Structures are given as structure tokens and as C-alpha cells.
Length: 77
Image 1 (cartoon, one colour):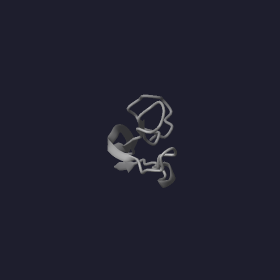
Image 2 (tube, helix red, strand yellow; image 1 turned 90 degrees about the vertical axis):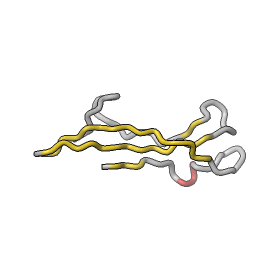
Image 3 (cartoon, one colour; image 1 turned 120 degrees about the horizontal axis):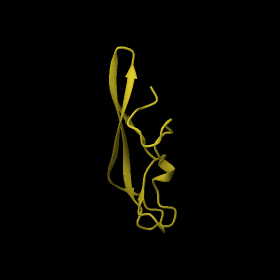
């Protein structure tokens, strides 16, 4: 199953310049989920946006949902 985690529309605009952020790629994570009788792979896709006008990080993207074990390939199921 493919799950897209994106920023809300109001966060896709640079707060300093007012210009829309430019998408520069994707961050893709795969998590293995067990459902009775089968294993599934959940693919989390997060668009990466360039934020050259912001101080600090030049890339902005939505955060991953919380998982029981951090950096584990197993999903909540």
C-alpha cells in the first residue's frame, strides 16, 4: 500500500518571501506489516521541498507518523 504524507498547503509557501516551495524529490520509506494470513509492505512517500529562503535546513517535508520502535522496518500491524 502506498501512503503519501505531504505538508499542508499553507506550509508549502515560504514564510519570508511568500513564494511557493519547489518540490525537489521524494523521501521513501518501506515498512513491513503483518495482517492475518499475509505480509504487506507499506510504502510511505514524502515529497521534499526546497526552502532556500529559510535559515537552517534547505529541505522541508512532512514528518513520519510515530511507530512503536524507531527506525524499525516493522509497521504498527
